[in-house]
Length: 492
Image (tube, rainbow, N blue to C red; front, side):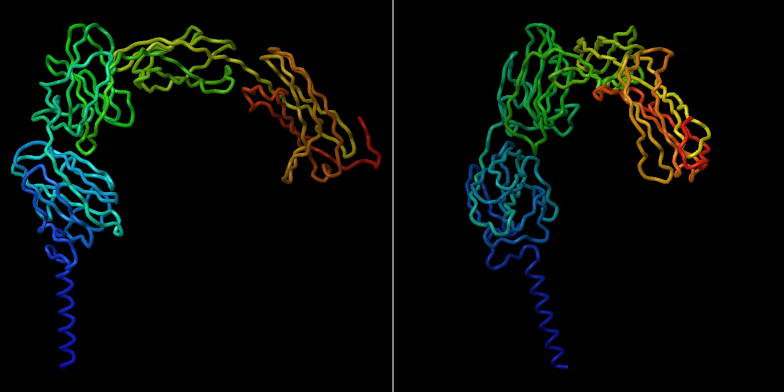
């Protein structure tokens, strides 16, 4: 009983030690002083530079997720803002250090927009509010890379054009540089209608000297354009992976406000281009090999717009006396009644109001031959050689046609080729050209009691497309094949 009691005491001590080692607020003996959230290094005034060391740091069970990256250890720094503004945080580390800024209390921390870095990223700027405490978690992405990290926190001024009232004037054409990390969400400012997350913005103004179409682009960033008088939005382009930007019509003498915006976590320096919008060059394309009068052709419509806008409405003239109105993304199909070269005209407009017209051509060239029912004997004896006639019709264009005659293998496997013939088949609305063949019936045919023939017609010029290949084959059966009357073959 005494031995059992000692074992229980030892187990209890081990459990208590384990709980103590992993309890929030308790650091390991060899861990840095600010390893735990509650023991964060305090920064009292800015600018400030401090060095933290992640060597021996641990990760507490209630540490928050940091920037969606895996972290093996964290140390903490704390700062309470004395005024509203922007703080730029820079680090000096050659390893895989990254960090995130939080507000709130232990176990209930909230990430600060714009206060999150990727491993190895050196600089980030975020907004602060007077009286709010900000908690900086410095983390290591790989457990084998730890050491000193120099951190500098510096107050920075917002960009001059951070507020709409101080919009920077621009002209057409021009290129201007901006930095959304020095932008703040303006109180009461609604985000762009096309990008609700783009709350960090800078403003520019353009006073039109003449009536024209203007394009404004800032790669990856949201662009919204507003009339200065009533702030009504005239165009909006969401942030993303291209530089198409906003397009709007200007009236001479009117002033327009241009907003460049992005979500705080994605804010970066940028270049903005202001230029005359390119004209539309609508086009149509038929992605179809050698179209024929039997094809319902798909017409692909494009705006030809360098700014990436699609045609929202318009009309397509097929060049054969018919036309069709269309709307954006509508599937357009058309069948021509006759061969020929047709000029197709597309007139359309984009959602910004620009219009344009473009032309292209489509060539209809129909090649179509067909095989009539085969002429074969109905009853024969083995050993007899009989004529088989294949008739080919051609109502389109004079063609060189190759006909191949096969004996169908009724028991499976490949059909047996009997022969081939090539003739020139003139175009005729009703005429046919006969291809004569002959076949000697065999004892094998007699054993089966019948034999089926298959004729296939093909254009000799393989570069030409056969418009209706489904009627290029015909079959016929000699329904009765009897054994030979004598050993000598007969020819009728």
